[in-house]
Image 1 (spheres, rainbow, N blue to C red):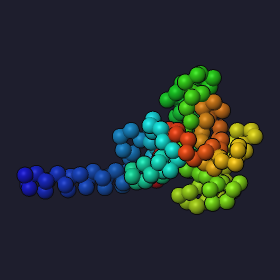
Image 2: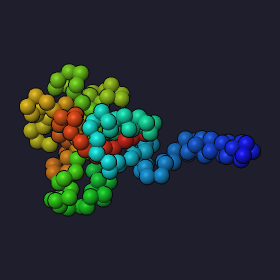
Image 3: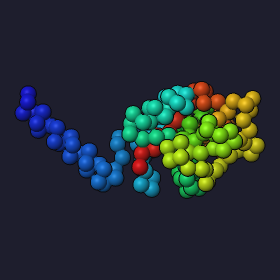
Image 4: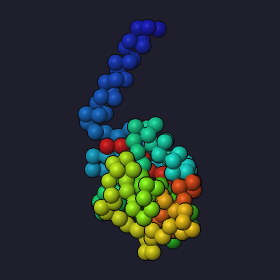
Length: 162
């Protein structure tokens, strides 16, 4: 028993090291420009989603460019169908890694503590409806444009690992 552990443990460590060195993503993750993305189908509040991502050595996705936003939107359209008006797509939303909990109206990416340089807000957003919308979601009903929403709402989420 001890011998097999001594053989398996180094093999496991080697595979993890190889994954780190080659930049390949774990099963179920999708690679784009040096990062790996997990499109989670489970629903969680924003804090629960961030905690899950942290448990996977990642964070909620921080979209920093138009190309990254197009990649994420494209993946979601593949997952949920290309028709932006399909009823299934309209029902899905995904948490992003930003909020304005620290200062109302000033959204930032939480992991990097950086301001949002690129944004893709739906027209009229963010609106802090009823003074309770502090977290950023990609909303299927808005063709995956960004919206601010209560952090306690339960949505799917996207983890990013660099």
